[in-house]
Length: 229
Image: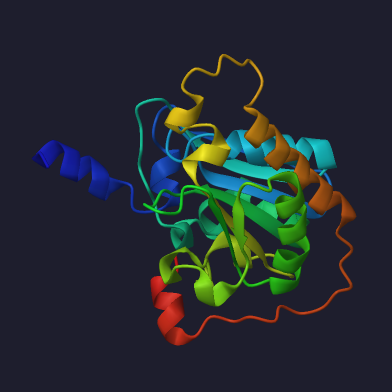
């Protein structure tokens, strides 16, 4: 890595640094107290903002996103997106009581696997069948012990766990986001069929969710908290 590239990489150590960069867009749309987030959106984890924002609009839910411009791929760890660094994020987290955060990942052998992390396992159990019904060709992993530790989203400062009832961290492989070679000849303008089905499933899950005020039933251990950002 060239020195200039390393310096640029090191500069973006938290949300406040990221928001000072030209072209980075911070978006907050307040509707219901159910929220969707895509704070690694834009050019970083492609189409996560499209998916989360579209599902939020369809379900009349709230949305918060940080969208990086084309050519920028700065991965600030999730636990460094904290409310004290942004008035919009603080307002969003105070408004919602539960969230689904949408992320992208890619791993060999997991091209059709969606991972459900986060501390609200009741919401994960509610969301999983919606995803399985809409996308039967995909594997939906909602057993937290089978989700890779670094993708579990259990860090207490991860925004997925900030609302009163916590939330679910949804990790999506490229194929369902419409960014894999499978879709290179897709002309649009609408999302790919898989992505459209995903958006519909997320909106349906949000619309049908009925919180009874129960507490989260999974907490990060000290060792997990240090690893799951």
